[in-house]
Length: 119
Image (cartoon, helix red, strand yellow):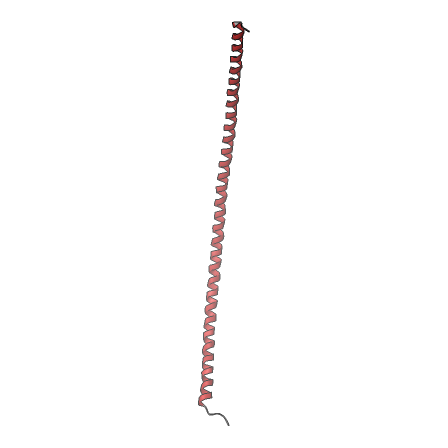
């Protein structure tokens, strides 16, 4: 173990082993980096596709809600117009009925208080 050739061989072997480990580590890290980058790119593409699909679905849903809202607004306006006309008709009939009742009550009151009682 005191021979210089042995120490040279040990140093050469250690340098070769460390160099091989460094080379292997660099290869593994490079391939892992490529795999991770490729998977990240695919994931980003899927997320972008999902985002685009979600936005288009929201637009379709918004359009459907707007069309339903338009239809409901038209129906509510129609019902409101019919109710308004029916309420006005009922009000006019009530005014006429109240006028007749008022004249009947006035006639009854006039007859009770102004006419002498029958014997």
